[in-house]
Length: 273
Image (cartoon, rainbow, N blue to C red; front, side, top):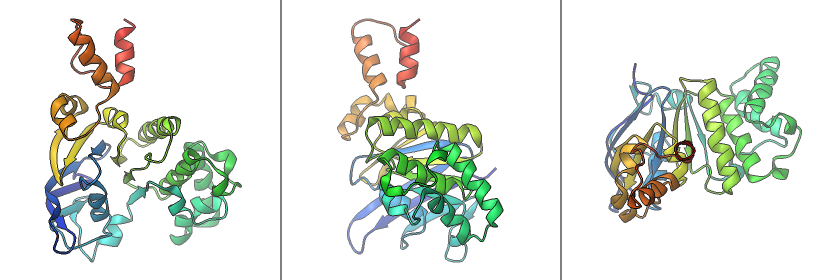
């Protein structure tokens, strides 16, 4: 089976400036939940724009669903990709939650009776079924982001990209979106997710982590494989999951703690034994 997303030796620069991305290569398989982390200016958002075809003029190759992206197939390939941005207000176009979710379906000429069923289903999936008649402006930040996610899910994508989707949320909102991502994966095991994020706890809960530093991939692997490079990540001005910090502190006190604990839930389970 082809990777959902494959990037080979990708480099990019704005105008004649120095490269923002340098020989980046990565791949995401169907059903995989990957996170891309990096400090501000590392090239994360530039990479997402290139994947979505919002910018051109790069060196290297981008493949979606086994096909190399080009001008002729860009629209058909990216139609299978949904993206959730940092500020959900930038994605709202409808006067109500239901209208907003329906926007993409209307553009795809989905029949009204089918559309209503889809709207109800995805609204339930994100816990917003009681807000369908509300104006988006009246919602909290977390609720707005859930509506934005519902609009993406309504289009039945094969890949969803979260572009700093939790950056403007409080800790409770971040936790809700992390839980929603896991719910999305449970409902659709083949759905691939790429989350470009500052939320280090989200990265710890993903299948695969890519660390971008000054436009290059610094580390790639499972959360355990990546977060064991403690000093290098700190030097790259990145935070470390609380569970990893706590495990290091416990080991420094002489306590035996398994090496593969990267999430708070796993640490709590271990400490309660």
